[in-house]
Image (tube, rainbow, N blue to C red; front, side, top):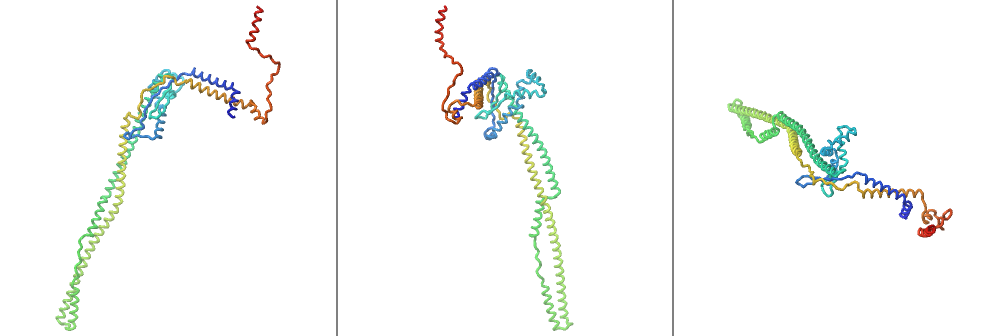
Length: 442
């Protein structure tokens, strides 16, 4: 129902659609007849961002897409367009120079102005199902498009080489500065370690071993056993007993009693001498033991103080080793980057010669006329529907019943107002009536 209604609206306003379509077709025909032809030339470059395992390069799908996008933007940048314009001789072209002079621009901006005109016709796109990039250029002549796209491809490859060289050299120079700073720091750490060794006077390991030797010598040295207990006290006890028995039997002035007293006193004197010798020996042993203990304590103190020195020396040595490894790694990177700066291989290989389409890609009569005709039909249809909605009419009995909400009883035909003209006779009958009159007049 809806589509039938739309069709009746369009059919009622068909002159509007016809005029809009014809107008757009005339505009498209004018473009086809007056627009200058444009020719498209293409050149392809293989991007070797996917290599085998030996090549050492592999990009994921997402990274590869980002890489291709960056390359497309690089092709449409001034760093490629300016060398390409110079290779084409546009910078020395008098006509181009006069055109730029007419703009009144700064002469310093002339290369970029020419490059901007060249960029306007450049495009790049990935070639489907491959790792190739297709570079294109659109120009007014086939030969100009072919020369331009070839120059752009060469400038793109050379710009990539220059960018790789400058990037590698800049990175190598930055690493060289870092290596110099790290070498100074390494020399400082080595000097600090030597000063610490000089201040400590000995190595901590040597002093610890010396303390171990002193303790082992004390524990494992010869042990002098104390002499066995003397029998003089027993003899003194026997002498005292004999003297007591003699005092009971003998008189106080008996020579035997005096002899017993003398023997007892001699034994006492021997005991006193022996005790004095034992005391002296014990005193000497104590002094020796105290001296040995003092030496061990001093060595312990020295070893404990050197443990902190040993820890500092270990930390310094670890830092020296780490700094040396970093310097070695950076030197290897510098050598690799400087070798890379001399390479010509940047993973871009030209594929075949540049090609140009012999047929102009613009204007395309079928595309332009078809597009303008469709555009005119759509505009006319929208305008017809809009006018029909502004001045709505019931063109069928069903539409009248629907809009009035009542049953249709009859239809009055259109009646002409004024005198009724007789119906026209056919031309053949009028001609037959006129021929006899002509003969009579003759």
